[in-house]
Every structure is written in C-alpha cells, then in structure tokens.
Image (cartoon, rainbow, N blue to C red; front, side):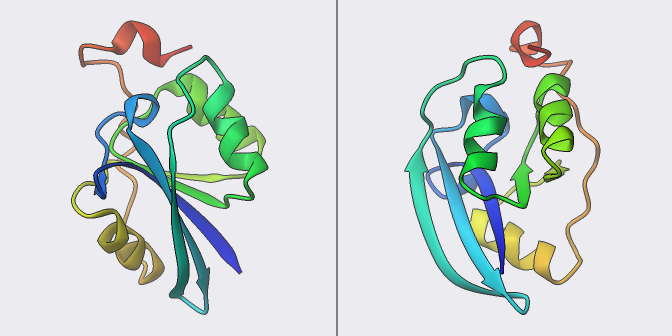
Length: 119
C-alpha cells in the first residue's frame, strides 16, 4: 500500500504547501485509491509539516508549490515530492497513479510568502 498526501484547499490542490487549509490522504493499492481522509492543517511552523506527514506514513506529497526547506526534509524522510500540481486533489492523485503527473520542481521563491518558504 502507498499513502499519498495532497496539500489542499476545499478539495483542490493548494498553491502553497504550508498555507493549505487541509491535507487529503489517499491510501492506494495497485494504482487504485482505496480510502481517503482529510485532516486540517495543524499549523505552519518551520520543519513541522513534513515530519507531521511522514509520521502519518505518507510516501508521496503533492502540492502546487513548496519551499526548499520542506522539500529537503521530505527528501531526508524518503518521501517523494510532486510540485506544480493543480486542480482537484483526487484527480491529481489519479494522474500520479497513472504516471501522468510530473513535478515541475516549482520551489516557492517568487510569490508573496517567499520569505517564509525557505524555513
């Protein structure tokens, strides 16, 4: 089984990982979603969210954009990071499972929160 998390706002992929409203978790088996649940974002503190998701057993994180600090922690925890996604969270997961969702490597450094992204 593989667990995929999506940083989301009302079921849509969030543009900014740390500022999303919630995380949607999708349990997948044989490239099919077998279960999903949503947890509210517990708060944006430097380094907290990647470890929070890792402790929930996440294998992949999908987001619109993400700071380099968060990406580094996910990499340390062996979690695949897919950024540059948009649209419905479940659709993004389905595309990922089909091998159709590719990361753009879109690290946050050009938007209004750029000062906080690298933390």
